[in-house]
Image (cartoon, rainbow, N blue to C red):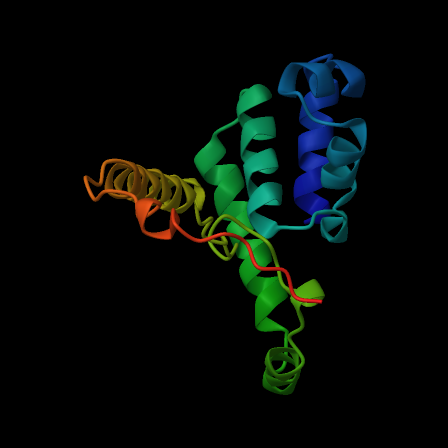
Length: 158
């Protein structure tokens, strides 16, 4: 990656473009381009982010993006083929949440549950039950039973 970064840096200088100008045009931070030009791949969280930055940088410099991406892929293959099988298995066993590589392909999305329809259904049912209760209680045609107790006086107990 260091050779590819140096190649991109020389092409930028040959084109007469400063690093700040390239950063403004590509809408990248200066540290991103400096890390690409120095070959520092550890500065990037995700290999896909690095690949996209290299591709857009090569396109910006007017280079053949396919050839640049082939060089990048060769570097990536060489870099990843040097990882031993024991290291890969140890990484898989101790793979915690904070050690995961976050990319659009591996990012886990939590499903959001909307509870407003549930609450609205409960409120509608409560209103309907209240209306039914009101209609049933206040519209009964049964006579009131007050007249049965008219002849009795109150008895006080001492």
